Image (cartoon, one colour):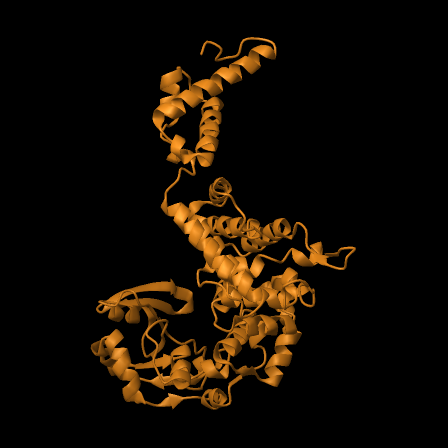
Length: 460
């Protein structure tokens, strides 16, 4: 087993570095790297964690710097980020243990501080010895997620989400006592920082079987504290073409969504206004009027609370806002719709529609969705003028031609000209647009005169 690890690891980290550390102390591969080997029989090449015994943090940094870049994550935590020469795209954590006067071997002390048995294994890259004090290898064989000790959720509440992520990621079952402790302490997730919840939530969204994770989060009571609107969506029937209630439809939409985080998040949030907007019509049909607008508010609040970047928030809320579009656009209407959404956001909106449709009725062919996407892409490829920047004239042309100064009127003219070319792209020629601007100003000034006096630009 040691040979299998070393063969892969020496392709990523120089064997000379391994030998240098082992000559003075001992180097271990710990945590997820060992876990994943026993699950997949492969050593992953990214996000490996190493433990080093026999070095101070400063000594370790000095040694690592001969073979790449080593920077402190936080000196108080005893962690260095290492980027090896020639493999700078990979980063690895090198840690020194905190023994705090314990008489147990340092490697055992370190493993005892880890969250779950499957993550509490270490392989010595010096002797080839596997350290597995909590039965992690056995739990992998039995497909179980188990705490290493009681109190782990109290020490770090983000482990509540990690337990569920590992169960969904590997198809494991959460061990009974661990599950009971998780359910009992679900409210503690409120103590975790927004940034850490965000990162863990994104990892869950990207899982191939993310629906299993969301079902576990609801059953455990975690959703009530992270995304209560999704918790409230459970059991809310939709009727019509929908096979599922709002909760199940939503988590399936996430599963089918493109891997772009913006599309995953939009799929998660696009229908969360439905529970509050649900009504039954006189004919017995169910409706959710205005749920898209309420979903935008819910999405913005959720994304802001978890401190997502503003640009991402704007992208996600925009495609949620317009996700209820129909396919019956005229050519003019389609160009106006593309302009409202934004050319760069249209692919995101189309991907959301695909996921939404697939989650309505699994096995759906998506014929209409594909035909509409083809039409949209063809229109975009024709490069029609969709924004003021696409016009054949600009503000300087307007100011120079009509002796106007910069101000609101320039924006008004450009918006008017854009409305003309959205309907008729062939009008996007400088001479035609300047003549249209002249007519617009003449009509504007005439209205001003009728209203009781010469306008500011009445000389034109």
